[in-house]
Structures are given as C-alpha cells and as structure tokens.
Amino acid sequence: MSLPKNLLSLRGVRKAYGDNVVLDGMDLEVAAGECVVLIGASGSGKSTLLRCVNLLETVDDGVIELAGADITDPRVDADKVRSGIGIVFQAYNLFPHLTVLDNITLAPIRVHRVPRDAARARAMEMLERVGLADKAAAKPDELSGGQQQRAAIARAMVNSPQLMLLDEVTSALDPELVGEVLDLLRELKSEGMTMLVCTHEMAFARDVADQVCFLHHGRPLEIGPPAQVLDAPREARTQEFLRRVSGTTGR
Amino acid sequence: MTTWQPSELQRERIAYRRRQARRSTVIALVSSVILLALVVVGIGSTPGWPRVRATFFDVHRGWEALPVVAEGLWLNVRVMLVCAVLIVVFGLTLAIMRTSRGPIFFPLRVFAAAYTDVFRGLPLLLVIFLLGFGVPALQLRGLPNQAVIWGGAALVLTYSSYVAEVFRAGIESVHPSQRAAARSLGLSYRQTLRFVVLPQAVRRVLPPLLNDFVSLQKDSGLIAVLGVIDAIRAAQLETAEDFNFTPYVVAGLLFVALTIPLTRLTDYVARRQGWYGGGGGPV
Ligand SMILES: Nc1ncnc2c1ncn2[C@@H]1O[C@H](COP(=O)(O)OP(=O)(O)OP(=O)(O)O)[C@@H](O)[C@H]1O
Ligand SMILES: [Mg+2]
Image (cartoon, rainbow over all chains, first blue to last red; front, top):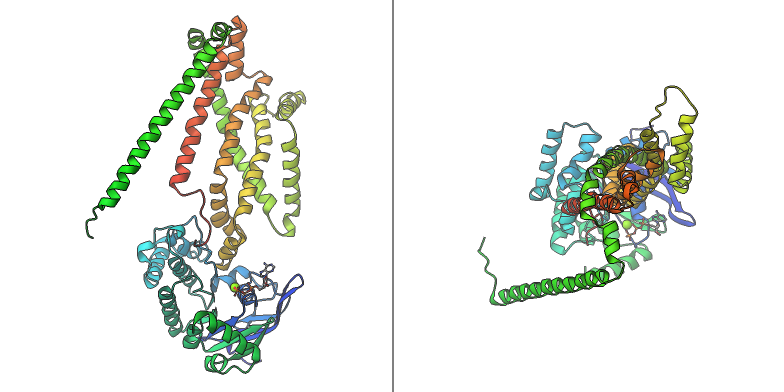
C-alpha cells in the first residue's frame, strides 16, 4: 500500500432513507489543501454526503477514509473523528441558549480541555477574523443571518480542524454578505485548509474550487476543474443544471 | 453619533399613543369598579349574606386563627421545598433514562416508562395511604416511621412521574439539528445532553414545571390524612371548635399569597433572560 495522498476519499458510498437512495456508489477524492465544490439540484444529496463524512449518518455501504484511516469502521471513536472535522450547517445550528462566545468555546473547553481563558482568547481571535468581535456577548437570536453564518464558521474553525465541511454557507445572505463570507473562505483556503463545500454560488466555485463535482442521482456525474465542469460541461444533465442555475441567479 | 430628535410627525404619534394609553387605563379602571360594585351589591343584598359573612369572613376569628394556620403552613412550605428538590432530581433522571438511546439502556427505558405509567395513574391519596400506613405497619427496623417522611415520599413518587413527562417533552422539543451540531463539534452523547439539550429543554418547560409545583404545594396538604398538622388540618381543628369556617379562608388566602409571587418571579426572570421562544434559525 502506498501512502494515502488524499486527505479524504470516498469509495462506493451508499446511503438510503427507506426507498429513497440518496447516495449510490459515490466516489470522491479530496487532496489536502484542496477545495472541492459540490453542486447539484436540491435534494441531490449534498447535505447528506457532508453528514456522512461527519459521521452524523451511518453509511449503508462503502468506505470513507480520512487521512488514510477508515472512519466508517464501526470501531472508530466517532467523537474523536468529528472533533477533527469542522462543519457549518445549512441552517447554522448555533446554540440559542449560549452567547456567541460560549458557542465557540464550548467544544474547546469541554472536549479539548483547553483552559477557559485560553479558549476565550482564541475564540475572540476567531471572532475578530470573521468580523464579529463586537457581538461576542450577543445571543444568536440577536444576530442577522450573515452574522450567524460567520459565527458558525468561527465555531467550526476554532478546533483547528483538518477538514472543513460547508453546507450552502451563503444561501441566506444578501450579495454583500455573500462576498464577505466568500472572502473568508478564500482566505482559509489560501492558508491551506482542506474544504468540501456545497454551494449554488457558481462564482465562488469558479473562483476558489480546485475541483467541481456535479452530483446527480447519488453519483458524481462530472468531476473536474471549474473551467471544465462549469464552462464546458460534457454531460447533458450538467449543461441543463447550469442553464437553470444561471437562469435564476443571473450569472 | 448625531443627537436624534423625534420629528414633528413622531412627536405627534407619541402624543397619540400616550392619549390612547391613558384612555385604556381609565376604561379598565371604570369597568373594574363597576363590576366590583355589582358583585358586592349583588352578593351583599342576598338574604343569606350576613350569615355567610359571619361564618366565612369573620375578621376577628380569622385573626385569631392566623398563628395556628400559619404554623401549619410552615410545614407545607418545608415539605414542599424538600419534595420539590427531590422531585426535580428524580423527574429529570427518569426523563433522561426514558430518552436515552442504545441497547444497553433498554432496561432503563422500560423502567422509566413503566414507572411513569403506574405513578401517573395511581391516585395520590392511595399512594399516601400505602406508604404512610402500609410501610410502618411492616415494622421493619431502621426505617423512619414519622408520617411526614412517608407522606413526603408519596408526594415525591407521584410528582416525579408528572415532572418526568414534562422534562421529556422538553428534551424531545429540542431540534435534532442541535444535537447534530453538538456532536459535530466532538461533544459526546452525555456532554451534548448536559450542555446543549438540557439547558434548552429546562428553559422551555419552566412554566408547566411551575404549574406542577403550585399543584404540589396544595397537594402537600393531603399528607394531613396521616395525622400531620398542616395548614388545612390546622384550619379544620380550629373550625371544629365553633363551626366558623373563617380559618379555612385564611389558609386558602395564605396558599394563594405563596404562589402568586412565585409565578410572577419565574415569568419575570424567564422573560428577562429570553428563555421563552428562540431556538429557531434566522427569521
Ligand atoms: N433524515 C432524513 N430522513 C429521510 N430522508 C432524508 C433525510 N435527510 C435527507 N433526506 C432525503 O435525502 C435527499 C437528499 O437530501 P439532502 O439534504 O442531502 O439534499 P441537498 O442536496 O442538500 O439539497 P439542498 O440543495 O436543497 O440542500 C432528499 O430527497 C431528502 O428528502
Ligand atoms: Mg442541503
């Protein structure tokens, strides 16, 4: 066996909810430092894929390897795997009873046993980065959609994960905030963060992605650099999807 | 920062709102006074009123009974406080058992379900009799035999089942995405429960929980059947002397006086902390 060259690799992953087969023999390779963007129609299984990688769902078949270790093995410590992966959910899922700062420090203090002061200092650094330092004491309900989004990104980043999973991080934002969040992700990428991103934001895909993967019927129908998949798609399905997306967003 | 001065239009609006508010207050006041007057005149003019007043609202008699009844009430308060603590602990434990996952906990889930089914169904008075008369009759050594203790135990057993269901409803009302978010950060099942699920669950069920405790406060009087002298029993003893029911009214007023500040306080705290509502995504 050669050394694993990819940080994340999915082979033949299958996931079904009852009769609804959402992922059907999904293969995907994500190299360290790479940004892979998943596109596909609503309901095509993008969020499901991210949840499987984060072990929030158990796969029905296939293998997911993170840094060469099979994380779909039922013997692995799922909590440990998860703490090395940052995920930002489509609906952010901030904890409403905690302040923004406490949202971010919860895992470092409780899981990683970082002393409280150090955790707070680091959380403030993250908040500074995402431009939310003045909202540290606010509750999530008191934040705008874009601010919640950035708080969720800060929360996911604070554990210094090897891999970030981002689910439609810009779906609820106005164009200006989209720009802000995308700038942040670009910056993360330039620092070498590995990212797997679901998005309908073709501009972002074109700009940041190393690879774009078009999901259709639970499989990657077309994978390749953005110039190929987005600008010269080979498959008829991809062409149709892109036509529809550009029709709705004007891009 | 520029100093903001309300515009002409806004000042007009403020003045209008103030006029409306004043009007509302006056209307509320007038209607209350009229209603009260009608009630007083209505009841006061009934033929039996003087007699009723003498039997139920005898101020002098009430004043006389107050110390005895208040002493009984002090027992209710103590029983209720101690029981409330135990009930919260047991109720929460039962709810956690019942919502636990994984095959190891199967027996716990079954136990919790069976427990709530049984004790929610059994009449409280029956449980009090069973424990209060039944257990001491066994003449087991080492067990206490004061009636208060067994009466309190019966309250705890029964109310734990109600409170467990309230907590369970709260736990289940926390959206699964909250658990997912906590687990995704690496928190274990227990940590997720403790730091994410329970804090949200408890805040949500605070009003129904309080309801149960107000009800407990009143039911704590039932242990009088075991011969304990609480507020109601004290009132009964007083009444037996001269068939004047004023001591009962005194006891009732004292109970009400105890619960009102408690409910108001909880509502106030909960609202101030923003405990009600919330938990949704961005609107
Ligand atoms: N917990 C669940 N139980 C049953 N079915 C589910 C569950 N979660 C997702 N599904 C189904 O799986 C399919 C894929 O859902 P998923 O959320 O992965 O879509 P998506 O690609 O992220 O869509 P979108 O772009 O709208 O976010 C859908 O048909 C959905 O109904
Ligand atoms: Mg989705």
